[in-house]
Length: 236
Image (cartoon, rainbow, N blue to C red):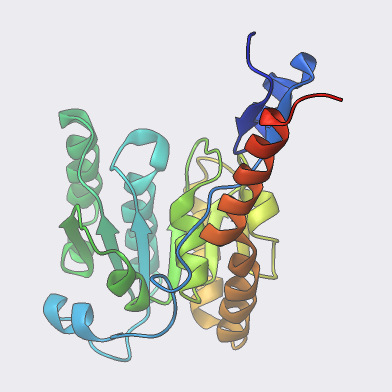
């Protein structure tokens, strides 16, 4: 209550603090030089044994129930049964033992896709992994402003994500990607199949890149600096 301003990163948080009259929404910033389309796009494919022409999905984040990585495994199984060949890279480590068990159970139900689901654990350099993929997935139960989506879009990836948090403002349906309901494996599978077959997916990726250009580190720093400057300026 002593604060002059409360800075938040999403509309949900903005609504939670709105009655204070102090809330300001400022999106997270990303390094657009580090996260870009420029750089090695085949290194991780070669390392994981993925053919250069294969369609690759990627998801980045701690493996936990709310992030929905187990749903991606289920969707991969459905795609395999439908004759759609693709790969999925999972970047991140399990939050708890039951999160790993949830992944293991999904793989047990769909053993045929085990060799197409690549779990690489936590990585200090995510940009090369993003550049190796064709589409970013984030089927979360809830989010604020997910930095991983901004980083993937900056690398030119179209996105498939749920309609939660700030995602509908980040990814406009059928423009920079596809939005799906929470917890719906069939919708996730359908979106993955649709995007993998779309002739305009590269154009979607370029629109995603353009959208991400608004979330630069410089823009973030400038917004925060202006807020501090205004707060420290004596009232006249």
